[in-house]
Image (tube, rainbow, N blue to C red; front, side):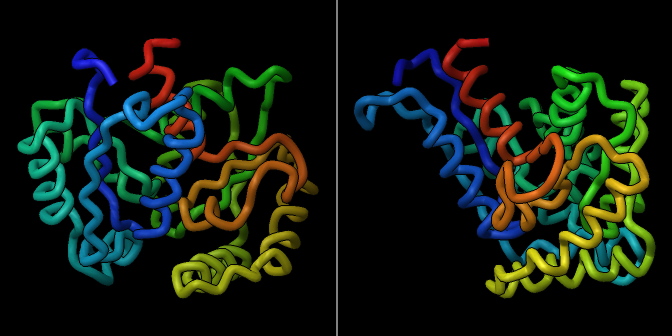
Length: 233
């Protein structure tokens, strides 16, 4: 690694396995033949950050103070920019950006741009995400700017999705049977692609596991980081 390469800061712990998954994807995508070819990454993984969805629906404390503390820690120890492997946490992105002087990359925005740039233009995509992410309309707003509609599960289906997310957080990964009916329902409504808008779902599903064009924000973020830091984009 040269001295000119920027240092990546990961504001993690939301959840811990998603943080590890993002780092592993960065490692896998980095063109490296020796240790020194890899990128310098500083990780602050704090699983004590309050639940993001609970805060959004008014049933829990705000995660912003602890996220701000983590962001400032990463800036203080030398990170040149920050990434956050949690979709729902992006609800507080503007406040976090005011708390530090280094850039914080918008994973939701990067994913929306990739959806918009798909080889075959998409008019509707399905979103699987936490109730908090859906309620704040993070993806709906980002994709509306691209002229793309977002289909979301029904309330009953969303309860199923949240159950799946909590099962994954509890290290139960056998959830495909609960996800597929929801995906099929959204496809039947005209969805032409699928966004895995929760990083817990990214731990379980990969391209080919679910029908249609597939957009995984964790992978989108990892690719962007490697391409940008290595100077290939």
